[in-house]
Length: 106
Image (cartoon, rainbow, N blue to C red; front, side):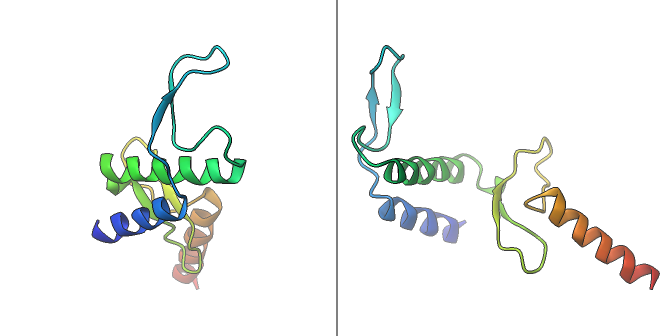
């Protein structure tokens, strides 16, 4: 988990996340902002993504994973009910299972 924390902290620094604040604008109910309302869209997305990952690491770091298919480095958040996800997508899971099947039946 130490590596996850270090990596997310690097993202927070790279995203230049400002101090979170509660905003009320455009008649919307109060909500949290992680970047200034005048920041560019890319900067706001970086800030929200980094803050979301930080929250995920603090809440349940076991739900963050990297795809189990060799050659695929995509990271994901495991939202499955039992928390046993191993692949980033059904496509990667199918590739691994088909390769395993072919290896067994060869």
